[in-house]
Length: 407
Image (tube, rainbow, N blue to C red):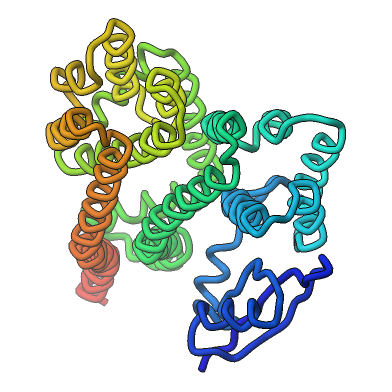
């Protein structure tokens, strides 16, 4: 039995929270429904270890709702609407349930606009850009077709899948990132703290030191005396790179170069295509026109070279051609994705085929990352060991040379 914490709405419209032991989340939902409650959420009380919970927190939130918050809001509104609760009452309930001030303010802002006569899509569009344009367009399409709760459910599924994929990548990169940080810190401490302590002894010896030792001592002095200048140099290079990449032509060349890298380029393309096709498939499946969907889905791309190819494809669609035709000639768009899109167009199931493409490439990205990390961790460990061994070896070589001097 597992302990679950739940939130639900009673038949009278009141919100209740509590804990319940059950074999599964579905069992908690069934028991709450049997009691006449409408389940809002049911999560394991001890879900994940402390490190995972800490890393999942948005430590640097800028006072607004995160993407995880947006996904939860979407799911809860869809659940309440499906149960027959009015939109206004649903938002009131979410305002009461919100455990963060930023989320409470966001829902209250939407609620105020709904009470003022605005449509849900207009209220979302006015929420300081928190809800992406594709999100607003899908809700607007749902309002036109009278299927807002269905659209919100699909949006919640879409956001959940995207969060799962993103969290999987973040979790996979945690250990290598910690390893790299510790490696850099260890080398800095050796050069700035340990090596300078031996320097007076070497100077008093009055004998030429091995070349390796002189290099290590010089590096230690540089790190010790000019660390602030090195940090400023790194920041300056970063700022310069950001400034240069603001130019569309330079950014296009840079992104095209990244996409052509031997291993990372293929991984980057697959991740971009997965995000693009999932967004496009979700939009098309909810009644958004293909041209508008292409424009909206293009905004999910972070690589301008792939975005340029999507612009070309959109131009072809505008001229009456199929989506797959211009993509066939694209340099970076994978051929497998193009052929599956073509099959979707021929069978009249473009939306489901786009989601299938996204599932395929999400899985490939996950496997590629797992394989890379399986190699990266031991390689980083070996590199760290070699660097530290070289520093220590140069110090030992100098010490031995000192003791070989005649007394």
